[in-house]
Length: 121
Image 1 (cartoon, rainbow, N blue to C red):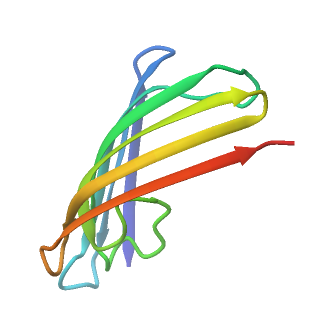
Image 2: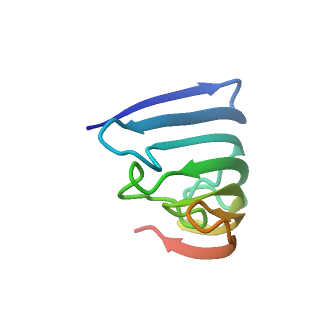
């Protein structure tokens, strides 16, 4: 019983805004999840030297965001995420994400750092 609405708008070739809102109509607590993200450019694996950056605020209720694909603000947390990606070589993209927020259940501070290097063949 989870429903989801998504929206995205690209202002031009380099600036975009996207987000979602989800609600679990069967849950009593932590029944909402939402995210708003601003993105600038974006690394392109086929183009060496391209890069991108983003900033987002996420609120991910654990009864709604069951299978989260986010890396630094996780299910059951809320907070800010900033990140960047860069293509140092053709078919290689490096990504770095930082998240700072709170656990929804305990109100404890959470802070995560995530890095990834992807190679495309």
